[in-house]
Amino acid sequence: MSVIQITVLRKMCNHDLFDQYGQDMSRYCDLVPDDAVFISRDYYMPEGFCPWAWADIHRDLITLAMGGDYPWSKQAGVAIACCTDGLRPVIFKLERLE
Image (cartoon, rainbow, N blue to C red):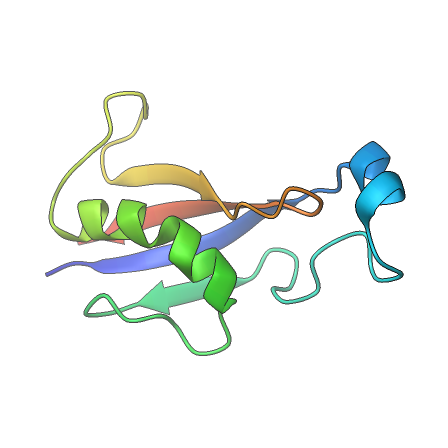
């Protein structure tokens, strides 16, 4: 079984939607730090990782951990995934470590 490295690539805000629907809070996710790197072993969520984001990226992580690849990814063993927070999404790079 492979180890998967999870890197925060980008934290975004859909400002127009946030202005219309968001609460009085940070416009960017504060649950994962900028440029943070996490390691997942044995399919487990890394300590300190956002549980909501984990639910969103877990499927892609399992595929990579089991040796699968995505035909739309230029690099074998790599996937780009994101959490589904419509106001403040975070983009992650998932990378299988051999």
